[in-house]
Length: 198
Image (tube, rainbow, N blue to C red; front, side):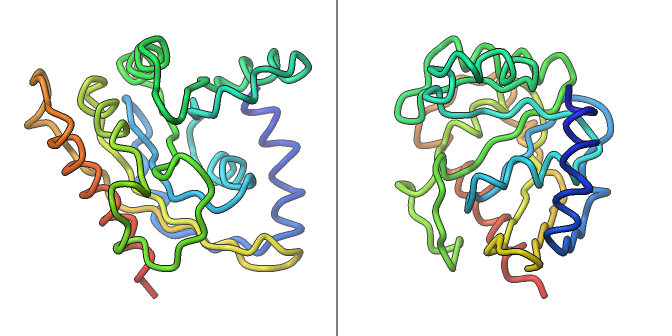
C-alpha cells in the first residue's frame, strides 16, 4: 500500500512544493528504526513517507479510526492508533513488535501540531517521552528529523535527517519516567540541532 501511495503522492507533492532534503542516507535500510520528527502540519507524514527509502508504521491519534470509511485504509497503511494523552498497553505492544520485526516506525515528538520556532527551548510539556520507551523496548535507534514549511503552493519543504541515536546502554533495563524524559530531551535537542543548520 505504501508503494501505491508513493506513486500517487510523490509527483503531486513535488509539483506543488519545492523539496529540500538532506541526510536521507542516515535512515538505515534494514532493521528496526524509529523516525522521530517535529510536527507542523497534517502534510508531515506524507512528506516523510515520500523521502523515506522505507515503508513506515506511523503512530497516529486514535480519533482517526472512529470513521469507518478510513479504518481499512489506515490499517493497510500500517498506521498504529494511540491515545496521545495516555498511550495504552496495546499501542505500545504493537509499536515494539514493529521494531522487533525489523520495520520502521514514525513518531511525531510533540504528539500534536506545534509551530514552534526554537525546538531547543521546548520543555517536557511540549513533547512525549514515550518515544524513548519504544526505542529501548524495541531495541532500535532513533533517527531525528526536522521539518520546516508553510505548505503553501510552490513554497519550500525543508527536511533535514540526522544521524541515528543509539540507546543501547539502556536495553533490557527497567527505566523510570525521569530517565525516559532525559532520553526524550536528547532526541528533541538533536532535532533542534537540525533546525539550526544552514
